Length: 405
Ligand SMILES: [Zn+2]
Image 1 (cartoon, rainbow, N blue to C red):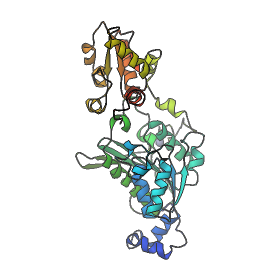
Image 2: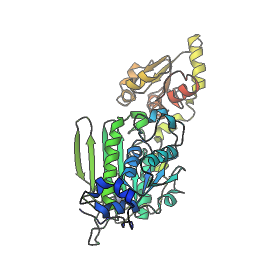
Image 3: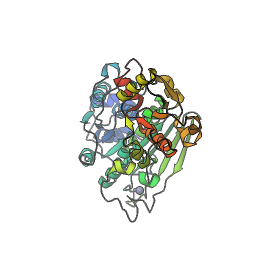
Image 4: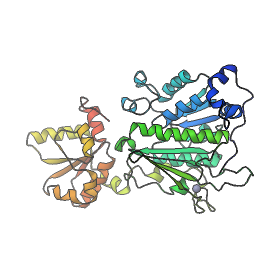
């Protein structure tokens, strides 16, 4: 499938620009016209994190004239393993500003617009409007569905990417795409591929599950590749196709994604006709876990007090860390025993728990432990509790000598 170029060419390139972009200009398919299209292009990148970092660097180097950066976060030391647009001197700086400074260093001909508010239903249309194309580097499902729906309502194409550990995916979602002859390309949206978000807690975030740093470059560069093709109208874009990358097997697979006539957004009888409550749709936590956590969540300060009492023989309980062994190696709450969440899901954990002691559970931030809390309570441990904020809160508030991750 070939699609017409998204952007009209700019009037001209300056002599400096011709010199700078000469390696593009001598590619026949790009040439002067393609480079002028890039100069005229306005691309919004959502997130200056794992995917946004390489995407912004290459979009800027390629000569995309206007780059928007939607990013509200600040640079953390743990970002530097993969977010290559930021450096040591940027720690604690707003990520958008840090990215803007790096872009200025690479290509001063790029205009950068910063959107520093967190994207939500109230501002997403204002932020998106005016851009030719969006590159989505979002790391959570609620924002992902919001981006999909808002881009659909504004008829803006977007290049989607996702990463987890050694696996990446990318696609272009643009249900309004039209072929050269003006007929519909019958292209799908994100909801056609993933009609519903995974159950909360089933798919860990990169913060919970980790990501190989270089995977961000593999997927981010695919996103830029597709962006350049769409902007200039060259090649066969990933419209209606899903690219799946396995870094361990070093394998790329391309699957066809069809437009779903029953899609809630772009189907024949849509039920999503405006922005919805995406947090409720994606559920930060399952209903069972939320119910279990009510009245059964303790703070790390309370836990510290309980541990002290336990050491004095004044009370007894079992502190269970439900994270994975490799997380347990990084940091831990002293006196905890490791029983990963999977053992609770398959039932084997319950055999390891004493019947006559209180069970206290924690994970990294409190999402996984809320789920295991529901399981343990269901098994009859009525006085079981979990630790709100998990080991992250413990390290922040009680024991800063341990590393965070
Ligand atoms: Zn759809």
